[in-house]
Length: 409
Image 1 (cartoon, rainbow, N blue to C red):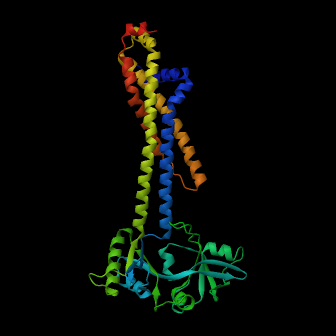
Image 2: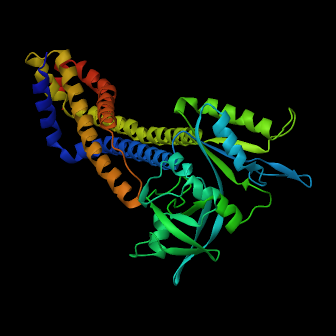
Image 3: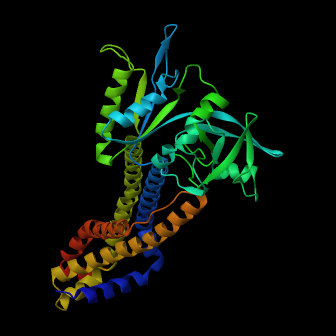
């Protein structure tokens, strides 16, 4: 049996005879492996980016918003009416054992003014627990307190984008800003949060105590009305229990009958993350499968060129058989040549794929996660393609009759 190392040397020597033809033969493998690596890297990066954006809102997060309603025979969508109160949030904390924290929200987009500068942003009234739910640390200063909320104090906590546009290089703590002509003292600045899953700038925000927003800024059509309740479950595994408990509690509190439609909606943002990641996984798999077709095309190219090589080297095969080479030696030699050809293409494709993934990430702003396992699998698959498509030409070469092969011109 031929020594594998000697077989590789002979294969490389055969490929050197016609380098251009070898490169063109490997082109399908190169494109296929490179495309697979780029697609998987970009898809994995996109899944990670979406995961980070959703996690940036907060972990174990549940959102309660007003539900649909019917007016004049037309069914309006979720959030079309305000049926929640801050007392609902208090009851959730008090009665739902799977819930760790809850915070009601009430706000709108309005102008914030400092000196001769103004900035239009969303001003949200909430509790101080909202920042713990969203895992949003304070960068400087402090958060407003529960006592300040009870007293409807005129204090504000600013996001980084608002600070940059209103204050520039000026130190904001202790300064006075005006929100709808009402003066507020800046008591804290939040750390940078980044974009939300919808692409909104989370740092473009101002937070004030809930009662302050209800009674001093925006007013409410009904006493103590709120727009939403943010809830944090005690543990990821307890999210389904927390949803069920919140749902049952609000049904009782809102006196909703068995056949009546609920006037609130409970949403689990963990499910949003899982759905988005599943969708991206399907897209990545689909694109990777399409790219893998190039590997099959490359394999067909290898088969074609090796069939040509067998025809061109028929006399050489006859001479080897005449000096003692067995059919198994000829078979293994041509198989080694096919594998060397495909793995060489796989290595070149891997290099181009890594470079392409980083170029795409740099130009698009998406992260690209190049996985070593993906590279190894792609290269091994290219080797398998070489064995699969190289077997028939190698088998054909091994079945040649020595005398007929020597007579071949």
